[in-house]
Image (cartoon, rainbow, N blue to C red; front, top):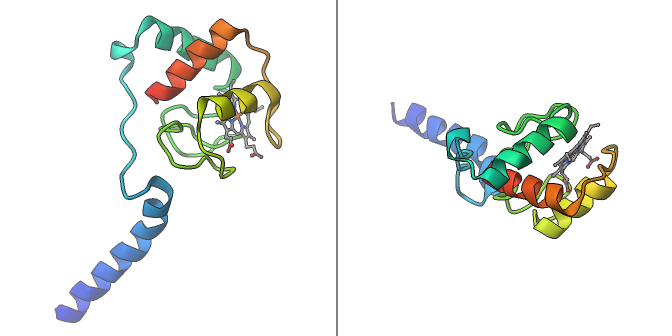
Amino acid sequence: MRIRFSSLLFALLVCAAPFVAITGCKSLPPSKPSSEWTPEEARGAAVFQQACAKCHYPTSTHGLHGPGLQAITKVRAMPSGAPPTDERLSAVILHGHGTMPGTALDDQQMRDLLAYLHSL
Ligand code: HEC
């Protein structure tokens, strides 16, 4: 019994380690429900549907064509290793990254989209 418990504990630690390394010891906070969106976040969600949804899941960390974006602004590092600052996010969105194409957005659309990304 003692052996089985410790190997279970070991398995738990091994499984949790990569997750802890990515999120910094915290589990991902849940996305804000759409019923609580501000007008800005709601407009950003519409921009996301048009420009991003075909390649990214907003409420999952599972990949589609690109990585899932749940809690993307709350992680320490994005898949590329860069921190998810608004500056970095805007640059990735406008100019693309790797196989991701850039998207032309005006300032208002970018502000709304960033507000939405922060709610994920
Ligand atoms: C045609 C598919 C496609 C579209 C459209 C797209 N992306 Fe991506 N995105 C990708 C791929 C593929 C990657 C991984 C790129 C890489 O690092 O090689 C990626 C990566 C990212 C990353 C992670 C960047 C990093 O530094 O790790 C973010 C954030 C992101 N996309 C946000 C967005 C947002 C917001 C939109 C909408 C404006 C969008 N993407 C539109 C395919 C797409």
